[in-house]
Length: 193
Image (cartoon, rainbow, N blue to C red; front, side, top):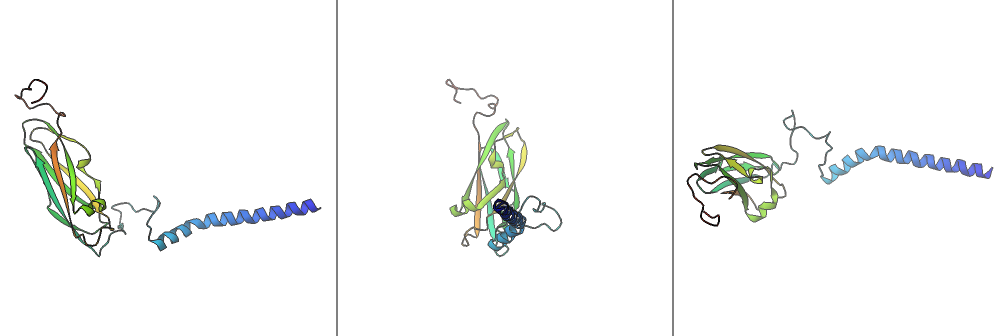
C-alpha cells in the first residue's frame, strides 16, 4: 500500500512538472517578444520580417532625428573615366541608400581593374556598412566599354553624434597580369615591359 501511494505521489508530481514545462514553453514566444521590445532589440523571425517594397513596409531602425551628408569621391589611376553619378547625398542613419558609379575604359585594349574604398573621418569606417559594392571584386572591361555599378549602403545609427559628414572615396586601379597586353607593346627580356 505504501509503495502504491509513493507511486501515485510521484505520478502527480511528474504531471505537475510536465504541465508547468508545457506552459512555460508555450509562454516563451510572447515573453521573448516583450523582453526584446523592452530592451530595444529588434530581432524578428523570418516570418515576421516585412518584405522590402511591400505595402506599409518601413525600417524601424532609421534615426529620423539626424541627417548625415555623404560625399562621394573617385580617383582613377590610369587612362579611364571613373565618377559617381551624385557627388553628395543626405541620409538618415539606418536608411538604406543606393548610389551609382560609372566607369569607362578609354584604352584600345581590354583591362581588369578593382576599386579600393577609404573613408573620412576615420571613425566613420566602422559605421559605414556597404551591402553591395563593386569594390568586392575585379572587373574586366573591353576597349571603350562603359559600366555602371551600384553601391548600396547604410550608416549605423551608432555613428558618433559629432560626425555629420562622411566622405567615401574609391581609388580604381588596373590589376596587372589579368588581361592581354596592348597590341604593339613588346616585352623586354625577363618578362617586364
